[in-house]
Image (cartoon, rainbow, N blue to C red):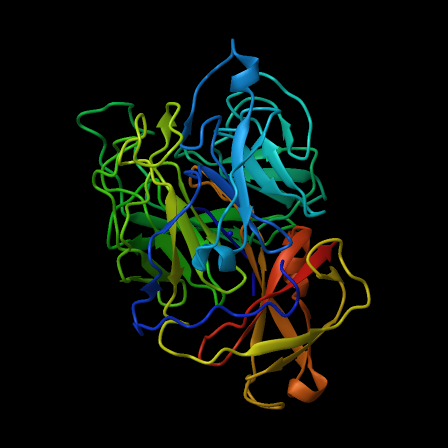
Length: 451
C-alpha cells in the first residue's frame, strides 16, 4: 500500500465527540451557517486541535498599504475549537502587528509550528507568527528521495507541464497524487465574461520510488460538476471530498458557485454527488479535515478593500464571515463510532497530549467498537494535520498502517508504517483514526511522527 497525498487538511487524546446530527442523510449533513469574526482566506489545524484562521490587514480582505506601515503591516486572525464554533460561543478577533499575511504559502512543520511563507506585505519581522518573503507560491510540490538519495521535488501544477527539480530539503514523496478541475488560466478581476472550468480528474502515481522510476499520469474520469477554486480533502478510509468552487471563474463573486460537494472513491473510480451546502465557497475560501472526521468549510469572496464588518460597506454580500461543517456519509446515518482508548508510547510530544511515533516504531492501539479481537477489527490510518490557502494544501498525506497482531480492546492491536511508505512519510503531527469495518472513523488521537 502507498501513502497518498492530496491537492485541493491535536487535541487531547480522548477528545469528546461532537453530537451526531439530528437529521440522518446518506448524502451527508451540513451544520447551520454560523458566524465568524473574519472572512478567512488562509487556515490551519494546530497540533492542539484548534483551528487557526486569518485574512489580511482587514477582517474581510486586504489593502496594499506599503506607505502606511502602522496600519498596513498587520494581519487579523482567530484561534478556536470546532466545539466553540458549533456551540456558537464567542470567537475573539485578534491582530498581529508584524506583517500583512494575505496570499502566503503555508505549511505545518514537523515540530508543530506553522510556517507562513510570504504575503503581500513588504515588511518582514518575526513574532509568534513565522513568516518570511513576500510572494504567494501557488504551486503544487511534493518532495521525494531520488534513486541515489538525492533530494528532489516533483512539481504537479498548476501548469500543464510537470517538472522534476533538485533541491536541498528532505521531506517525503507521496505514492499517489489526485488532481481535479481547474481552468486554462487564473481568471480576471472584474471580468464580465469569466472563464469556463473543467471537470477532468487525474491520478499521478510515483512508480518504484525512491530507488528510481517514473511518474505516471492517468485520467480518473470526470467530476459531476466542473469546478475551480474548490478544495480536495482526503478522508479517513481514503475517499476524497471535493467541495466548493465554481463552474465559471468570476473572481470575488458567488456567481456560478457549486453548492453540491462530491466524493471520489479511488477504489471504484466513481464520483458521487452529496448534500448541497447553503453558501457558495469560491475564491478565498478554505476546507480542512478535523479530528472528528468532519470537514470545516468557511470564507470566500474576500477582495482588496477595508471590509471590517459583515454586511456593512465596503463589505459586499460575496464576502463571507461564516462557515459550515460537513458530516460525511460515514457518520451522517447514525453510525456508532469506534473509540480509541489508549495509544502506546512513553514519550509525549510538545503539543496536544500527542504520543511520539518514530518512523520504525511498532504502535499499539486499544480501541472499542472494532468487533472484538481476532476478527476483522478496525483498520488504522495516519492523516497529516494540514493548512490551506487559495485551494492549495500540500500537507495532506494519508498513511494506512500495517496490522501486525490483533489483541482487541483488551490487549490492543499492534501496527506499523508499511516498509514501502517509510521513505515517503513526512515528519510532523498526524491524526490517528481507528476505522470500523463499516467505514466509520473514531475521533482521532494525535501522534507526532519523527524520522
